Image (cartoon, rainbow, N blue to C red; front, side, top):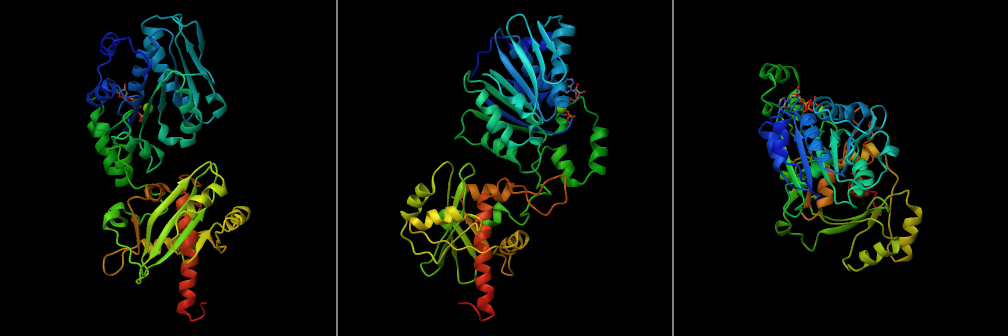
Length: 415
Ligand SMILES: Nc1ncnc2c1ncn2[C@@H]1O[C@H](COP(=O)(O)OP(=O)(O)OP(=O)(O)O)[C@@H](O)[C@H]1O
Ligand SMILES: [Mg+2]
């Protein structure tokens, strides 16, 4: 974590900022990665600007404010400019307020304002700090590919501050901050009404006029089920089962299903079906940046008998690679929408109150994807976003083949 020599509380007093309870908690945290999801008008932008100021006042520090557009970024920078330049009369040695924004001060500290829509602007040298305002509106790639590497050299910190946007990647980061395994991460969640400067009348008006789920997301800062979720039927409380409670009988049929990838993960799901045609995903293998030969070696370590291994029909060369290593795959070209529908049919509850699909809690990637696999917000397209779809695709390849066999069998023509 970068050096902080300015006393935050003193600076807040001097600059006339009196943080509310939610903002105070955030300012007090010393975690390197802070994720705050807060409602609309909570004071995210103001509080981000104040964090930035305490860093800029330290000599020789370099930081970025990033948001989806330059206009959004400017809201934070304007606040900084108002406090430091207009009110405290600190004169910048460099000032650029259009396009990529730059403010540089005589003591060698600078802040730059960047737009996630202009990835070329996101390449740069090591940072001491980074604020990503309204990051839930941006793609995870912006953080993973462009921003995270800028923090390595100087062990910089990052503050993610945003209203949530369904179960997207921010949900993942937020959960990380609640997980004791990630000691450098801390998460906060706070509704709009934590800001005492907001009119309660205005919030009540919003409560009455917005749908419940939109109000919950935008004002309560809740990760409401995104209307864009592909598998709305999926519910961790129903479909996820603790590994120790999972009893797979030796008579059940077993299958594997593969989705190919190198930059994206290569996924192999291990699936069993019970005599009542319940599908149980009992294990997963997800690895990036390995060759087909390396995956095959891993897969071949297991000597279980599988009925068959399904995979992506378009992966001809990968299939050939698996075959060279003794792994035969089968695949049927299928309609995406039909595949999604067949998975949904497995997810729904049966008359006895149990679902047709269970997932072991060891399959963390598959569970994550069930939560995050979504349709695009701004269109009525039937095709899901090609993100968080790797385990989902592997599952679909299996279900399509398995159901096809099942239907043919019922019709007496299978085999
Ligand atoms: N601690 C505070 N003291 C005084 N005013 C505050 C405080 N926190 C927030 N405000 C005021 O509340 C309003 C909303 O603040 P801000 O724009 O920072 O919120 P936001 O969460 O970024 O809003 P949006 O969701 O619109 O982006 C502003 O008028 C701001 O000045
Ligand atoms: Mg804001």
